[in-house]
Image (cartoon, rainbow, N blue to C red):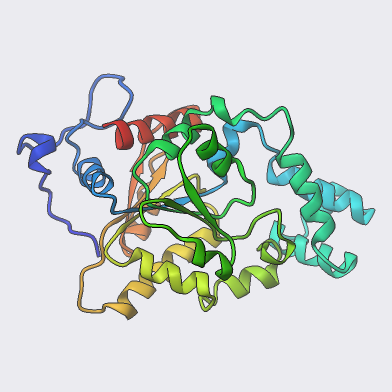
Length: 299
């Protein structure tokens, strides 16, 4: 569980308690805010594992999940509105696989639509900050390749990990980008339907074993995730359980979830799993994420 002491990192806060910022600056916190100070220090030491969700790609104009559901309905010859009400995207993708025989056609459509030639990742401040930050390990549940493209554009070396065979390519000092739900170049790696997702949550694959090792002694920061997504919430729960089972007598390092809005209910629930919320209220979630990453990486 996270340390509940209300002390502030002396180097960042001058030994004084942080106070809410009253002016309308980039962040909703003073530079010496306890959570941000602790997180910045962990980032400076390269002790942050980043988990990246679909929210980071919103500013690129990629199709929303509703477009995926509409496409599945069209391919199956059913009404999109009624089809979308029959279950979440995992269930609908499972049904698509059963009807079509594989997830391949859906994967091919996603690859075309999410990697259109008009997408310009070089203009994304979010991706620039991710590439230039001190994140030795980045897990992403995104299927697209824009994170890797951003690293290439900013001339930052990385190693992409999709399967156990890729682990042999790891190099010291080179950022690891682990495609935790697969990559659109490899049908077999994609975690999209219910069966593949439930198998992923068994946490028994080589990548899961790597995840267990990676989170030991490090803080995990989640960005680009919706608090309403029960799938990612289950991941929070599993990570907490993994820590307690692996090192039951050692305090779990505090992990953090960035959110573009405050929610005291979610904050209390996440705290029991060792996750602190860092909310930053903004009308534009992408601008809120930029402000957070600038405070973390440039602060």
